[in-house]
Length: 75
Image (cartoon, rainbow, N blue to C red; front, side, top):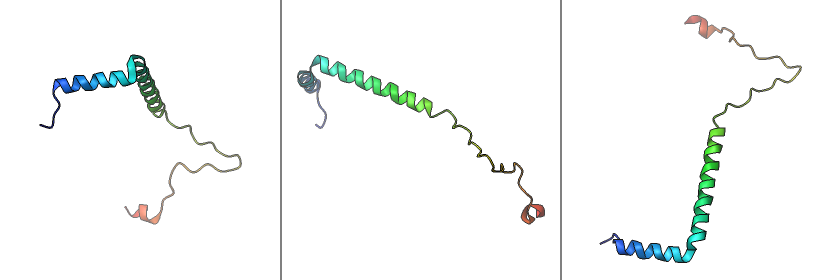
């Protein structure tokens, strides 16, 4: 009752084809494909690690080893 039959889908497809035409429809699909390619390329570019932070001259680099505190010495 709520689904369309094959005839309904064919008529709907014919109406859409008449409204958009063959050329416009294929152009739209080409644009969608270009958008998907650029999206995938953008997602692949996000996988690259960010560059290391630069150190400003005159500032001391943070120590690599943490300083022991009373809390860590108890354990």
